[in-house]
Image (cartoon, rainbow, N blue to C red; front, side):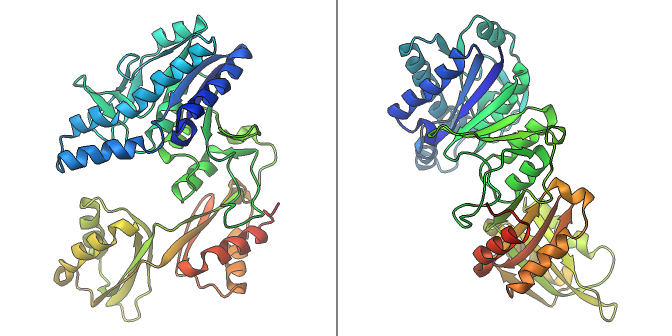
Length: 405
């Protein structure tokens, strides 16, 4: 007997028919003799509707009441799934975040889980009862309901799996696993049977939307084995696990891309100590995340150009902040560009193999694609290129690393 956590996203529970289908998937796991806890999202579109209600009735709403409203989406789904399971003859009970409880900090709308007190839940599981838990919600220090922010149901599922010491956390979604790149762009992309936590974390943070970044971070921290599966077809998924579980490690496991990038270049910035701190300090204070950074060599020792990237949605705010400090920072001109994309090659095999970056640069050069900015880590190489070349770059790199199916 194993203890399994299953998580079903919004498209998987979009309507009553799909909730009934989810119930059959849960029953199949129970019929194998396993203890099962299920985490559910709100039905597709419901969270957006609830957020809209809050914004319409009070544009500058109280975050505590916002959480009380928005958390109801998952509450409805959990109750309906428990009923659907009971109709199939499976003993099931829904548990709200405060009933377990799932304790969080007090950051309403973006709370972080601090502790899950699971003994009561474990006792019910050991009696053969399926626990259906609404994702995305918890209990704050003031005994008020909190929500974890968008994508929080994945985090709820992983945290619950850790608290229950589950053998595995199965994430059911509308895709059947993790692919070497976006199969909508590269038809030859193939599904990975296994991928390491580190690789999945890089892919999630660099644009792959299969798993939410926070959930992968938590899975890696607590060594929770994740499996990504389709809710709609019976097919093997992708296991996200420790590197030690993967015998043959790929040199490159995947190619990720992110269109949520914008480039800013400050022309003729004073080349002296402290200037970078004065540039990036106000951006940090404004909660604007800076990603890739490159500084040109100063010809005369007096001035240089500084290029960096921010999120596309933060571009206008970043420009406004910097222009307001033009005299203090002493730059001659500011050039912005939102027509860029970040493309990254990812693989734990890079740790022990040379030439990965060279293969990337050569493949892009052969297609006439100019690289604007480069950044690297132990298991990834990222480049910034013109957005018009996204599809060409992905196909070229996918082939260059031998990832085509």
